[in-house]
Image (cartoon, rainbow, N blue to C red):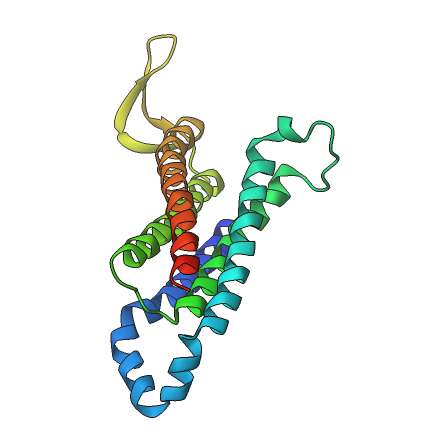
Length: 204
């Protein structure tokens, strides 16, 4: 079973709570600097950044493997991988929210500058495009309504007109938008991740 709509709504609220510190970091970072400068030095230090960075990288690699397991079933023909596609999809969703929290720990809510700021926003786009797309798709599937968008008119094979668009067509069209956006953002994210790792070691 994939996550229910109610579970996904809870995940949306959790993601919003995780993202809140990024909006408030300009308020609390100066307070930490004044009240506990040693703590700020520690969380901005090399040991803390490397440790949390490697944890985040492990999450990213695992997320990539989950995506490959979901979409590349043919790659695993000779390898028996436990669990169903739906189980791996569920793990992919929950670990994505977990990765969001790891990035909060890694950055302590700071946006960074220049490249790092863009990299962070691309990452947000990766997470939110998937989460919002899955929430919308699941909401449509679980809805008792058979048709949506009643202002659209479809013509049946017998020539009759029926108002609205069926669930399957709407889900397919929606998936074409959010999944396409998600894949593009993921591709950009991986390129920027490689450059981010290079910069981290270059300036070490």
